[in-house]
Length: 97
Image (cartoon, rainbow, N blue to C red):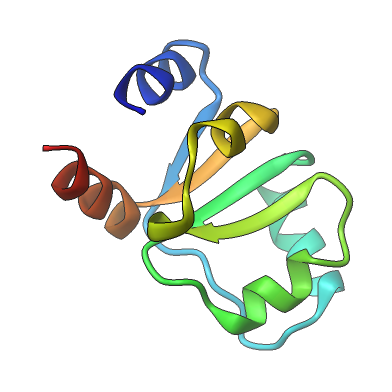
């Protein structure tokens, strides 16, 4: 898992943001947020899954929302980019020590 994350960082495929959530479970809102970040095919990785985010992402092709506990290496390499929150990075660090 560590080597996959390192490789994603080396390839500039890892995007770290302070926070990523949705107020409403609308796909249109998620698409707008992702286009602001110029992301199309993306795995959104958060510490705990936000239900609004999960519901909005399930309607999009090549976009998936996942929490740290359900992460596996295949999901990481499946997407063009990985959008990860700071709290998820901290949780991953704890799990990988």
